[in-house]
Structure formats: C-alpha cells, structure tokens
Amino acid sequence: MERTGLKQIVMCNAGTMLTTPVSPLAIGLRNAATMERTPHAEITDYRGRKLRNMTSFKIDAESLQATMQFLKALIGWTNLNCDSQIITREANEVYQFASVNKLGLDFEYLATHDKVSLKAILEGAFPYAQSRDIINSAKTNTAVSFTGITGEGADFTKYNAPYFTTIEAPQSTALFSSLLQLSEISLSIKSKNKKSLYNSSMVDYVTFEIKVSSYDSGITKQLEIIDKDVSPSIKIKKQNSTSSLYDMFDFAAGVLTLHDEHKNTDEERTLPIVFSGDVPVNDISFLFGASNGGDAADTVGAKGGTMKIGY
Image 1: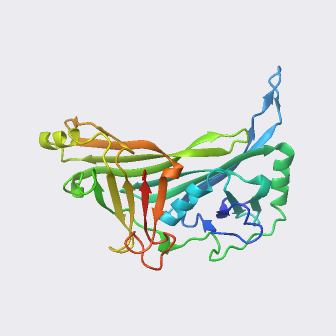
Image 2: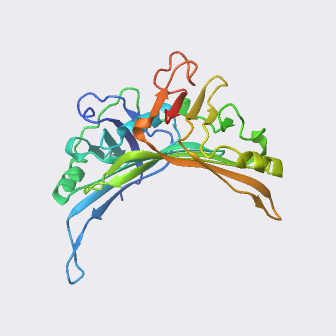
Image 3: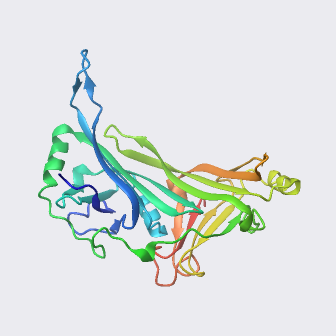
C-alpha cells in the first residue's frame, strides 16, 4: 500500500527550475494540501461511453508562510509564469511542471482574526499521452535542490499570528475608535481568472474584500459610516513578529466601494461593513525595507512590507 501525502511543493520563476532556479519559494509550513489528476474535456458518444481526451492536474495547498514576499511572487507567477516541483511522501515521486508542462496559478491571501494564510492552486490539462509521460517521469526525475529549502521548506520565521492594529477609511481616520469592539475583521485578496482551453488560469484582475463588523453600532456611528464617501482611501495594517515589523495594505480612493448594514437582534447588535472591488494586476505594487514594514536588510518582503493598490 502506498503512503499518502505530499512532502514538498516548491515554485520558482518560469523557465529556471531545470537549470538554475530563480526566486524559489516553498509552501512550507502549511494546512492540508491535495494533488489530483482527473479527466478533462472528455468526449461522450451516443451510448454514454466516455472517451479519452485530456488529463488535468491540480495541486491545492494553503501555506501559513503568508509573507508579502510570497504574495508578490504569486501575483507575478500568474499566467503561466512559474515552474513547480511536487514531491510525494511515497517513494519520493517527483512531479515537475516546467517548459511545455507548466501549470496555471490561482491564489488567495486571507487574513482573519484566526489566521493569516496564502493558498496556491496550480492547475492545467495536457493531452492524454503527454500526461502519461508526466506521470511516468515522476518515477525517475531527479529532484531539483533549491537554495535555502530543505524537506517541506517549513520556516517558522515566516509565520505571523494575525494581529490587526489599524483600519482607516479614509486614511488617517479610524473606521472604529477601538478594535477591541470588533466582532469580525478579514482581508481577502484573490485572483480572478478565466480558463484557457488547457484549463490554465489567465489572470488580469485581483479581487479585494475587506470585512469589518463592530458592536459599536449606535445611531451616531451609523450616520458616520453612511456619510462617508462611497469609495474612500483605505489603510489596513497588521503587526508581524515585533512592533516594528508589519504588513500594510494601502488603497487609493476610488478603488474599493463601501457597503454597510445594521443588524439588531435579540442576540446581538452589530454594524457590518464591506469594502470590495476588482483591481487590475498592473495597478498593484509593493514597497519593502525600513519604513515600509520590514527592516533595512529586508529587500524582498520576508519580514514585512506595504502593498499599494490603485496608485
């Protein structure tokens, strides 16, 4: 009986893995991960018999190493811009998706009061014979060694607990006077895809959604939210390993729109607010180093950073 599980999932810049890998990053410290192979675009005849066409590979993994470095890399790796290697726990089977075998990429960054994570979804379909070659090669492929990555690539220095310190809309104006009264806070950043004929995601936009709900929900507060501009500038910030390191998300005015509600039941009275919208990939940039969330030595966003959206 073969043993279950994935031992390593690593991505790097497209066209580099089989020579000298550039900017490799591992899923590393993670939640559950899956690898699936399924028929794609099967042809069915008049007797209901399914005929072979293509085979789709899909790897779905949620990393707890949700650094700004990783988030920037995933955005840049969309549209077939990454190579990937997946090693299973059973006999170290080595699947390599590079060159004509590259997979498309979707991603989701999620920061809530409970966790901060980055999900990567690698997916693509290949003609039946080509997919057989991919599977057969996994028995004999020599695993690529990535600088700085051993085993599954777990790096506890890249894990940060969720600790929000700032939510402003417009910027310099706190959305609520105290975060201690919040009943919910979350930030979701997700690729918005179209699928190619080969089941690979093509990404032009990124969907942002900020959810905040507070028990501070009196009439005065309701009117304050109602009177805000429908699309204010927004700043949301969370602290990383020390008070001087942070991740910040800086939205220009006119990027996300505000949707507010009021709920008053026998159990609770809250003021839920949602900011949301799709943003072109080219309207997203990053700043790293001292005064931008990291320190002077952090030029890639491993310790912190600032994402600027809509500027």
